[in-house]
Length: 391
Image (cartoon, rainbow, N blue to C red; front, side, top):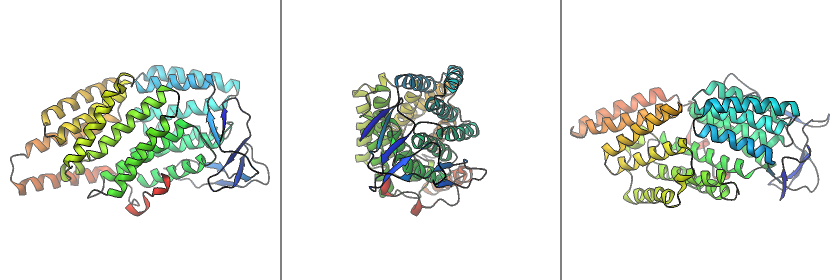
């Protein structure tokens, strides 16, 4: 495989997985095939080019140049620590500077990071608009498929936050197609993170545990850690390892929905294994290097562990701490999730002394409330939501 950095020329040659040789040019000529997908009010205006046949190039692994990496690292530091005002000022300055310089790799990447930051603030409409703008800018970059893929991953995340799992899968499909041509280690690790999170959310809406989906989600997070560890930058390798361990523990604890917490039991072996993954985070001192937002998510999973062990007061105390910290930092996406989990723990304590029949009625009432407010898209079905080909 050939490696290129952000200084390389605007023409990209790469090798796809099926053995065909492909070339992507930023400005299509007359004989190129252009596929403009249909869009509706809830979908991005997704325009991307079909690659044309070429001979004997290698698949590209993209590495940003030093200036690009410094900018990206600063943006991620601001958003991960809740410094949103600093993020806005810095990102807008970088857009102005590098648009004038004509460096559209940086301009597109900054726009995509702005979309990610809007998700942190639970402004999904702004996130979708910014992701679309990033997608449009991708066509002006040196390696359009990479930046198309980055935009698709953000759109997938937005759809998942809107509980539209059909669209979530569609955007993952499109990102995967782009990665056939070019990828960065960080972006490929992000793909497996998004795919695992998508399956994790899917598991939360199932009436009973699905072992195939569970194993695929666990495998995806393992791949995320494995690929992320190949990145020499600690901000990537440490963070991907941390999140992989955390999300594996979360899946093992079956804590991705009210239904999972109230209706499904977790085996002692899964609880012990989840505890082992959380201990690995502490033993490897990953908590020392992660940002404040990540520590909040760690506390939430630890509270799930307390809940599964039956220590409700410890679970609620951790959730209250997490809520206060998320509120102070402005992580609005996390607040409804924490509130729902805290409510669940409170209700479970309230029904502890009821009869079995009374418990069933209370739980069923809660499930009806969850289903009515979830907003999952009606076309979602188990058969078309996941396949092993992504892994």
